[in-house]
Image (cartoon, rainbow, N blue to C red):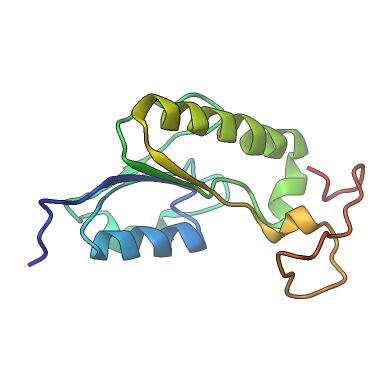
Length: 149
């Protein structure tokens, strides 16, 4: 039995996605309480189905483009429709998720004095000429092309 007396309460946006679900699992295993926030627009509950009955796991359906009022110690912002298929379906909403989502979560972090980790997809590099992209790669981004959102 794990000791949960010194755990953090952690918010993971996009927690239903591939990376988010694995992060939820790992942080639960480390003894933390997890709020998995996802509107399941591009994800399904399948990735987190095995976590739903965990006593320190909570799934919250919410869109990060709207403010969120929870009490947390840390936030991992992974919310964004990352695949070309999803982000090109509604590029305006993708931009809102990236911009308003970050602003809302930074506001939450400021209010709760929580640490925040902001992640993004490799799509920020545009249509790259280098695979995989190292952090030193500046990318090949067309600011008006289909990946621009």
